Length: 160
Image (cartoon, rainbow, N blue to C red):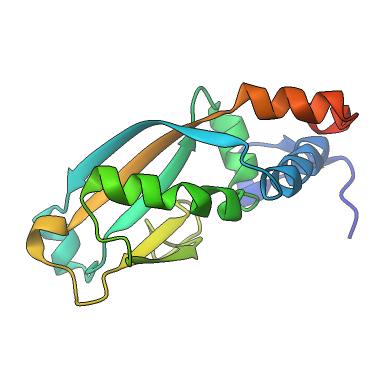
């Protein structure tokens, strides 16, 4: 299905379909190479109301540094999940998680009623001890060296 004109994702802000096409291209390229690096990791402990609502597994959410609200909304369904997965060992080490922790991508990681907060749901092999019941918020930046390599190879259309 080819997207033309303007669409309304969730009925709020109109988003030009060209943004979606560019997002898809960036995701395809990012999943082939190591295009992102970790800029910042924030660890937030579970709040009591989250446990009451049935949230029993930690989450890991990714954000691109300086990403606008419109860009975030338009790219929510086109995140480079394979690329983010490559960063998980570094994140586990900094967050004190065992390396065998499993991560499953979910569009509904942060909100069970809509796909507004995609992220990884983390599963510990022997259950999750209370001291590891934390949400992890990761800010990533594009690795400029890899981006320059892409441009040198003639893959400029991904950055237009």
